[in-house]
Image (cartoon, rainbow, N blue to C red; front, side):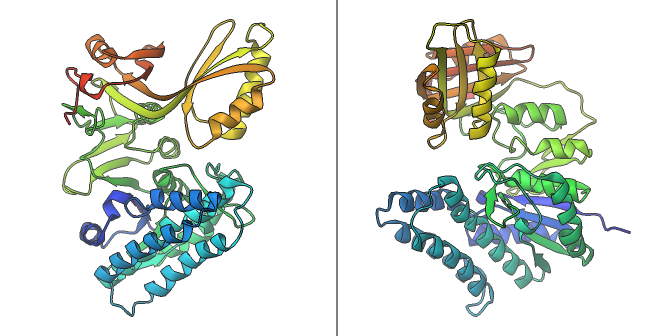
Length: 439
């Protein structure tokens, strides 16, 4: 009989330093009898730091190695506070960093996204090695699993699409026997591999998705995301006052919230869980005894207004160069390129002569898109925008969110309003029941 398994995910903020990792260990002491898959993110702001290494290597400005040394030093300081000096983990972590040294020894790869994935995944690999070693050090027996041995994607780097059949087979072959051995299994979020064994990533902040993949493939009893908030909130508490915790969410509402930009859960996380009715809990690692938020099937869809804010948005206003209408064949062509570039479309609106689309402004993807279509289309790009999405809106909330803003695009559905806005003054966002946070 197969053992039941639960999947836990700990993000970077819960692993930011030695004290945080000790706290994670204290949380896990309460689950010492459970069979857990523990998915960990890179520690603290490591991914941001490694992105600077990638950028510096691409520029060839001589700073990449110094930036990498800073990342190494941060991790070794954390290890020094957790482990004895002669622990095997030091050699294992060094071996991981050596792989980045090898990348930096070579000229920058012509495919930036490929180069990015070969460097950036080191954060999760090192983090998992340290957490694994610490858990064993405090008598919480754990095994270490390379997520790349389980999760297979296509070869689109930085936004790999999971090959589900092969991933399920690998999970049964590799992960399931480890679970049957009992205890904890520590693995990495965010990273996967191609059939050629090149590292891919699942999209920024993709560790939640990793946990959902393992949950689906192993028929998990439940999945828990440990956050620095008490659960799913009606808005980001760093941006708004008077936010409240939502105790219970339906899968459908969670999918809508995350799709529209709520940051508490990665957008791709919910669907695999829904497909097998695996409950998701979002709990606080600061207050692990708190109830958190339950996400599942058996929930009544009645909610207060919920606000999501997506920053770093670009609005593309696209029109034909021959003054013809924007017809179906134009849309098909545009969306084929959007799909190829893995551009994330967050809102769109079309008229007879134009097509407006709001997308995440990441790296050079928007400029590449504009360059690819410039022969047939005129493209005007507005940058540094915000996308405000309000679910279950009240009119007074919308009016307060609009105050002092230029609304570039607005779309209204039965339960949802989306507004693309520019030049949002922080001090003007005042509303009831939601207010902009002070300071």
